Image (cartoon, rainbow, N blue to C red; front, top):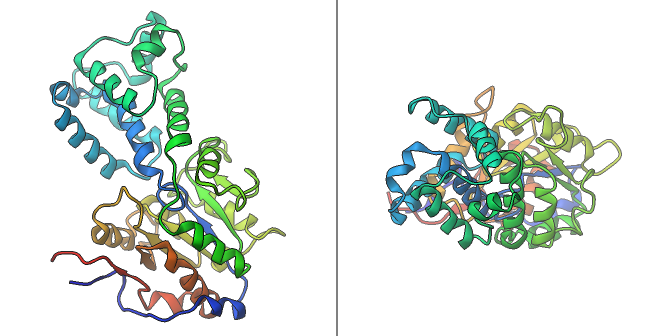
Length: 343
């Protein structure tokens, strides 16, 4: 059957409508929205934490079991900051007999120039090699490990994404359509710098985002202390830059997001229209993910995505409708049918 991403269906909106619309700007999340980067980044995050997860010890010689654990980890943690994942695993370690917090265990191994040997550590190194990363055994023995696991994760993620980041489907054409219609856009992401600029280059987006300061806004890197989504700060900052000249009011902006925390951030910033996106490769249950984005689980007022797209090619028409008729022109209708799903 046909599953709609909103309460009704509207078809036939044309990008040409942009010519008569009021000023509007688009604020894009990056990972899993502009860039199909969530899967490779989450792969790195999982294998970074895996040696320290007590629950995985029993799966050390079970590759299929480890893959299943990774898949569950990605579903549960996609869109979240690595710091939150660290805290979660530390809680697991504390509940498993008072194991050292991860960063203390990392510092111990760093001082010994050797990762604590275990079947799980060996399995992790096999996976790191498949991702094109140096093994933990090699970096520790060569005294090349970063001073903290958080720093190691950032370095490894950057190395992986430099070769694995690709645009989400039809996104380059959608960006060109926005440029043609003179609609300004910037990035509003939780992820840090230089990670996102590296991905921008790998995806071939640099012409659209020439400045790391004016065009790429990061909850991690542009605030001290960091302000991670669902806090509204990165969206408020992005709105103040979009289009230059002091930016646009949040109410005249469109946010494009693939995660619950990102939708919550946009809602908490009072962005005029929140567009959910489920077209990235890491989202397998598109119908379920769309409904989750619309529930508004991470927003202060319960607001969720106003509309959800499965194909970025439909974004210009949604922006045109918002620009000419405001949020009401879009909230009453779903612009895109999600792929057929079983009941």
